[in-house]
Length: 324
Length: 304
Image (cartoon, rainbow over all chains, first blue to last red; front, side):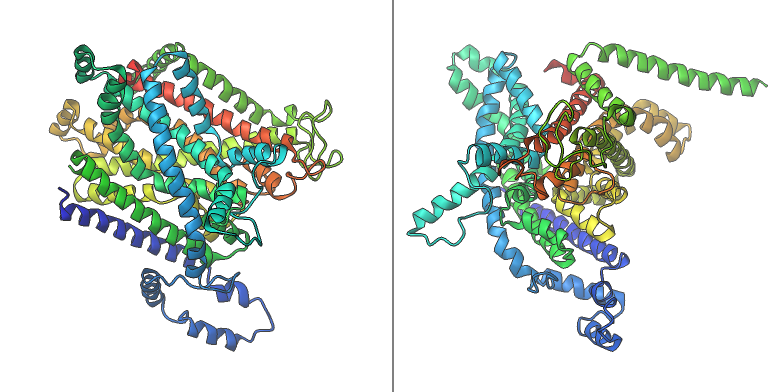
């Protein structure tokens, strides 16, 4: 069983590190001068200095730095991330509108890529040294070396321009009234195909190699020889004896993947103009919207940390050796 | 006099040891076909970067013809939306992309080694705190963190990009260096020098660092690949320096300023495909070199 103290320790280290990251960003941002009143208003001669002073007092910017820091930590932990300078709305609301799209892309591609890389990886390991394994692993290595956004651009080029099978941008057809839920789901899947394929290709390229190598390692174990000697059928050797044991490192890797997936999402969503958090981060830098950028980063990081914690606990449950 | 002689001979001995080691490394490396292919590709890119002014047919910032010309004999990869020669752009881009990759990797490895050695050597609560911190930094989404750092310190500066990549990318190196420091620390000769009263500084510089350095070299090659990917992503998002176009920047312009609508609504494939291929080729060559080096350093891997 999972001990409570182990979970508490895991959660605690994440919370502490997150607060350290928050603090570092606060002091870095302050030292580099992202005080919005200084940055955006003080250059405007039409605004009297007294007005700016009043505004600063209203937002607590006239307090000493350590008081501001305490306010900042308190607000952030309460989900108060400030206002977007561009949208003039609370950052939290904007990010929350976009988050489901990203979560949809990420969770679908994680599930699909895990299944595909599991099957393909075991197959390559089984056929190790043959032509199909060599060609396959080389293709995977090349995919691993290509920039995600470029992969997306190529897919867009081929399947949206030259062969216009899929839409060029967006998450759904603009201004359409859906007849029923089925139509709605169909439209969303239709728009998500290319972004999802981009993420999938990259993920599979990465994790097929992991799965293959860990299966190859297992194939050298004594119990595999025993299984063969007993006359266990090949398919059963492959999936019941080899794959089951090779799976564990793969599960551990899955826990580490979420942050990495978000990187892919930022770039892929930008290429396909997909309305998720990744594209929001891109828009925030192009609009010079620091608070939106900061808030989006925090919310995405919290999501990643929570997802990772759940995966971590699951791993500890599947393989108790991890906890040592 | 004798003292000086000893010093000289010791330096020479070190040098000879180094040469012997390098020679042995080269003789094993030569037998690996993927390693040689990777090295050949990387060297040709480095050659291109060094001799860019002689190799590129045009000035990459000059408008040489009408916009969005398809590839022809005159312009090998056509022209972009303001009539600059894309082939020349890519040749100059080699310089920018490789420089950023190598510099960022160097800083990354320095930070990682520092954290790893301190953590592994001191152990105890220092180790515990540093490693917990490393674990969580590793999980955080890297690209958003980089974007945030660049938004604070200044966008469109490669110097800041290099710094940002190195202060977020050291975690993998730190973990690896830590684990080999732990194993070296327990070896007999370290115990021996401790017994005759060697200080921590001596043990770290004379025993631990020389022994982890081959591993650090292999890690650094991988870090170059990683840094180049990060640079490409950040430049693609428009965080690069417009006066020094890297491959990622070329793709940024292709994405944002009309690369998609070149001839009668069809995209300029000659603007979109080549830069990505350059990135992919360089990264593949680095991975091949890194794998070969790793196999030499860690012979256990060779069995696969």
